[in-house]
Image (tube, rainbow, N blue to C red; front, side, top):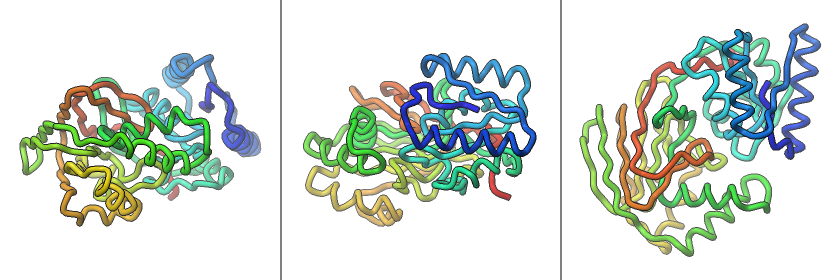
Length: 289
């Protein structure tokens, strides 16, 4: 069971105790794993997976899920997720109970393993959305904020970054889609394996983690006055009808823009250019039956 190496979130600590109690009652042996830092925790997780555990359980938010994916993707070891973070967007997309650690804990022993697609950038496995442009800046800002807690942190980050907003020139190459290449000034570019990021924003509402493709959402050059009319619509997916929004589907996407970086699952991925690829049935996840 992977737990946050920082160990500072009380909610995650309580959820971990709930999981351990459930596993003990069910007669399972459970080993909490937390290294001194993220790299140390991942190394320990990979060691346990290589040794042949039955399940790798992750207690935390999307960042912890991201860590777990690096250990189990491409193996037969299933991943169980107990949401206890800020966004919990991977769990939201797959129907894993949120706000109920006991129900999520039961999936460790009673969940149905299902093969789920992932995205990949280089050697990095990604469960939710690769974001660059305004959305990556918001994630970066939110990660550096210490207040407020929860989803309000993203709201504050949005307000701060709006004051610095400017459209950026992008080149987007799409393999396996109807449109091979796009060049445009964009405010936001998101590549989704699943629909959600940022604590419930349906930025890529057509993304399906079972279809072997990735969904791309692009917001063309909307400035600081126009973007606030689009952002609230991200929560219900109605932004797709906005004239400034374009959508694409592809199996492989190359994103290029000078001086721009990308985030995925709330974690820093790297500077552009990057290539995002769909990897069908890359991980087995324990889900409600």
